[in-house]
Length: 291
Image (cartoon, rainbow, N blue to C red; front, side, top):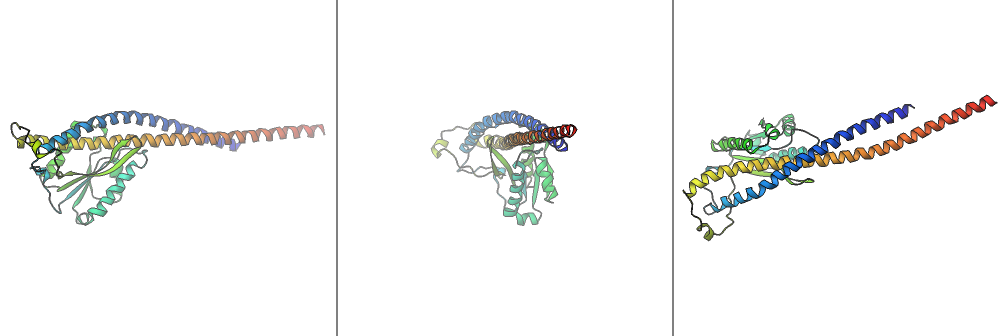
């Protein structure tokens, strides 16, 4: 009977876990639907905006401080993870990619204290701090209230740091959303802006009339493009997180279901064995009384 009690306790525990993972799966699916709609709606706008910006370049080069390339300067790496766990290898991939990026490309600069890490997501922050990496701060609150306005304020800070030459290169490490089951790990240079080759011919460039002038238009478009880029990165990462969590919780729920089947079978076998033993004891006792 002690064995029956043990199996029964395990069944209750697994069933409770299954209910939790099932609820988390539904919550993640709901958040995924919203975040997926947001990123899919933003991408066409962002692509068209980039195309328009490319049309305003002169020989593929942008006359802006944000395109200024500085050699051997100070680097800011911004890894994006989640504030919560239970999302498979989502966080682990970002952490591993960040450490590999430093080791393979910026090790010498890092050894000379020329690489800072600014985390978005408590999971990557906790791990990198534990491993004694140079984490200078975090903006984990961006994931709790993910809006364009908040992303724009953060982008403005990064732009000011670059403009003031506090940092000479800013790089994001994040998961780009493809679909619920697939996230693509990306290392993307934010500043300086890479040279954009115009998608139109030089003849097409002469078809535009700029009012008041090209420089003033670029002065407005470039900061807006950078803010849009940061917002897109945040949305990509958030949608990837929800997709990874939904898949992870789906697998956990399925595993719990399979385990429950095995435990129920074990319980029924143990119960049947216990009943058989009781019947044998009763029959043996009755035979003894007759004798």
